[in-house]
Amino acid sequence: MSTRPPASRSRSGADGGKPGRGPKVRTDGKVDASCPQCGTKYRIPAESLDEKIECSECHRVFFPKTTAGKRVKAPDHTKTYLIFGGVGLGIVVLFAVMSGGNPPPKEPPKAPEVRRVVHTPSDNPRSHQLVKWAQAVGNDNRLVLDTHSDLTAVAKQVGLENASNRDAVFAALQSHEATKYLRELVCESAMLADESMIEAPAGGKAVLFVTPKPGTDDYRRNTRGEYDVSFRMDGEQVKVTGWSVKMVPARNPNKPDPSVKTFQPNKDIAAAKTVEITDSAGTRKVMESEPGPVPHWDKASPELRAKADQVVADVIRSGDDSAPGNLFNRATGAMRTLDERKAVVPRALNALYELYGDVNGNVMKISQLDRALRQWTGGAHNFELEGTGDAEKDKKVRQSCIRQWFAFWWRYSSGDMSDFIEKEESLEMPPPKSKSK
Image (cartoon, rainbow, N blue to C red; front, top):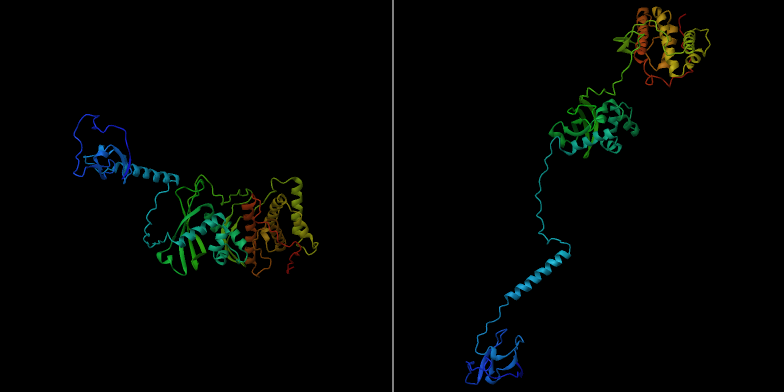
């Protein structure tokens, strides 16, 4: 304990000089006094009670007389601890705010339980790939079509000889009747034929479901179409090998089917009928109309009518042995425009009508008219120039050919004939000569 010089104040009692009961003085002349701050006890000479002393523990300076004979309790630091604890907590919160409010680290998540994926015929990798292929047909995604198609099989499906020209195969998929509903509707689901095909190494079969595209009204909203599709597996990759329409979607009755072509039948020709015939090309069904007189095309000018009549006369005459060798080509080549063809075909049909009664006797003239009609329209009806030796049979076959030409014009005279005009026929081919005189 250190001491300070005594204060200059009275050594009388603490009550300002009035006598009072003082601290107990021990036999050695000292008095017990305690530090008022930390409670450390000291024995102070009685004559030094008025002197300042400094506590050796907490360095508090005090007058011993203020605590002499008194019991001093150890200080309670609870309040101090609370203050410092609050300050510390505030500092922690401040640092948390300044660091961006990052939450305290969490315990590492527990490893998720491994669950076995259960596939169904409509929810599995193969059905998903088939849907992707169908959608690729609809939007002409050639990258997907290349990876999801057996191109050799697909080429045959769309009527191509081989799959060497990939672009030709992809283009055919965008125009072939077999993919019509894949293009006009949208495929969003597929279902394998049975559960065994989910993992069958060879592949299998499935059903594709197509529904109307959003925002279109060509088909009824609640309708759907179905395709049967076959596929093989190349590792994990589906390769489509074929497909066919299983169920046709219902069209909106207020929206006509654009793929169904309409036509205006020729009013000057009898309505066509379907009949079965047998000739050198085999037995098949064809359309025939009964021949009758056919007038000029009603939109032909007088000059065009005269030209058509002259061309038909030259075509008939080109079958004679005495006719110039180039007469047929010169006559048919003169009718080049669509209007010229529409003007000359009715007059050629009218000439066939006039020769119809004796087809065997007029076989060369009819043959030349048949050749000219093929060139002008692109149609073909297997006229039999060479006879079989059976006059009745030859007559039947040749008259059928004429009736087929009348049915053709009854059906196609109102169109542009763009589907039938033949561009590849050689105009230098000499006219056939009859062996019979």
